[in-house]
Amino acid sequence: MKNKSTQEKVVLELLTNLDTWVSGDYLAKKFQVSRETIWKAINNLKNKRDYPIVSRKKRGYMLHTAPYLEADLINIYGHKQLTDNLHVFKEVTSTQDLAKQFSSKHCITRPTVFVADKQTNGYGRRGRSFYSPPTTGLYLSIILPNQQQTVIQPGLLTTGIAVSITHVLEKFYPNKEFQFKWVNDIYLNYHKVGGIITESIFDLELGAASAFIVGVGINLTTVKFPKELAIKAQAIDNDNSVNRNQLIAEIIQAIINGFLDYTNPQLLAEYRKKSIVLGKVVSLNTGSEVIQGVAQKIEDNGGITIKRIDGTFQTFTSGEVIKTGFKYKGDHIG
Image (cartoon, rainbow, N blue to C red; front, side):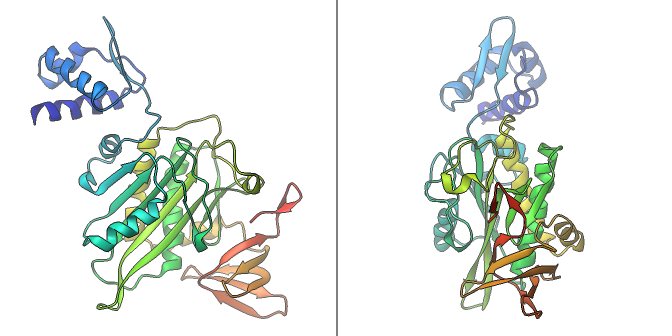
């Protein structure tokens, strides 16, 4: 246990000094262990855990910003709030599918997270594919138990979590202005950079949702998109690769907090302010038909009210805005 504790302390210290040399003597004195203990801990991290640590005589140790996702790093950035409830994979079909499979076999009493560096079959609302190449994005699903069996408003939950996520993105990308396309898409400069899917796990005996699974996909530095996506999708910043482990840790916490506070009227007010559909001509796919009209209002339950072509008003709590009145490169943004 002592070695593990020393390793955790060393990693945390190197994390706070990313890409900077930290001497072994400094680490030994700070943690009140021998230089040999530090050396063994570093070697274990390098050789058995594949941490990108460089060693140099007379200089010490340097931890490079990790290009991959690592559960230990995410937990350290997240102050170990998840511990055994965090599952990180190099490649999966879909984190959302993993979360569903896990929830069908386990009793969920704490938030449980599934993160992947790559998805081969990632999807969003209505099963629509979400392009998920390795190392350039953020793909995760989190199971949120509804232990109080309270009635949750799905539309309002999605808008609240969307705003909570963009608060984190704005911290990491302070010069970016994020927007929302009803109900679950995150936009930047009228291009999609992220999507959110919220699915419920219904308990027939209780007659209520026992948990919700929130899936998130964000294009961080993705440069090349499939042809059908290139016109409407983009990366947040092609030239700036943030620390994905830290970003994921903070987004996980934001989702958990957003779930607890999703009815906060300030979240909905911010969502309305950053909406790119209000006042625009839109096409809304309800699943059974496509409605056309002008988006008038985001309702208090997260629904959207549309003034139809015949002049009547109709409110929708589910569906997807598939086209809007603004244009880019001669085509509608979906």
